Image (cartoon, rainbow, N blue to C red):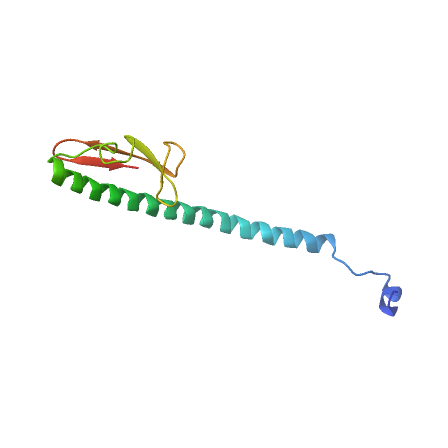
Length: 115
């Protein structure tokens, strides 16, 4: 049933097109700000995972060096392959399927681990 005000003005309740366009514009502005910030946050958290895994590899290299008097590749350290993938929980996955691929270049006197 229509109220007396609606009968008098001839207007019904609801949103106008202008109001909806303003809401869409506000949501778009928030998305433009939020999406790059979220992407940067995810990238930084993935880098923390990679750095942590590289530290683990460095510790394993030191243990290997104590036993063998030389540094070894990832396969010699027990990782199963010379290049492995690392997922967000630092689990070893197939190369190319994780967040980062990790490799180690080792010599008798040093090593370089890259992700």
